[in-house]
Image (tube, rainbow, N blue to C red; front, side, top):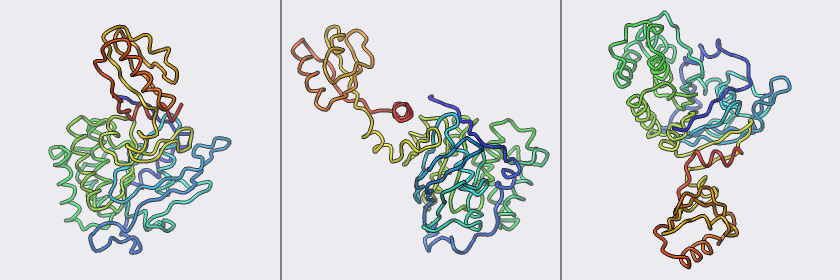
Length: 333
């Protein structure tokens, strides 16, 4: 599993986080259409945020389309959490804007969103069930509807037996599940989730992925950050890569792969060390009769194959599908 950290340059807003686990009755302007799906996606335009002399987010623009999982990745200080806080109104941008359904987002719109902050915004000395029902009431649910939603989510995330426990008695992974439930209750119109998979075991990861897909199936735009590149690659239809506060890659996995350096694996009958001398080809790794090469000049792979055939048998010559980890290293170098 490939991971990397994220520590944005921003002050701590724990008070804001505690509030953002809650919501209020939906704003009619962002009501769903007849199918129950939200009217549109989330669009970020030129978002910039400075802290003193530090420009933590620098002209960030991207779209979170309806009905798709969009992965948000980046390294230490990339600006992911700061960007998410500006989307949710926890932090005011220095410049730029956030749009919802094609117009400037309002406080009422944001109240229909499910938000999971980087730090947990839970009350540690309250029982899990009571606290989540309370948060559901703040979202505009009746007590009965909130209790039904909480009970269902507790069961799906394997927490039914811990419903009466105080949050502080739970493991960090189980606290993470409670925070997730707080964000998913009440059919939110959009989801903005900061590290939702952090601390979850493989079964909980699969359950969480199923829940998110149910929301996208009804047209909800979902933005989530993660340090787990293999997980993002498996789940997401769209990717946004941030580096030093700027978007350095944005698109579907296939679009990002098409822009990546082309690599080929070649397996020969004899030593493959000679591939290092082929013009337009960079030998990434050579081990005995096999080599992994990057084609840096179009057409160089044909010259490589012709020389390999001239020298003897070729057991394998195939393009290699670049992983998200490879793409990430290329665009953030």
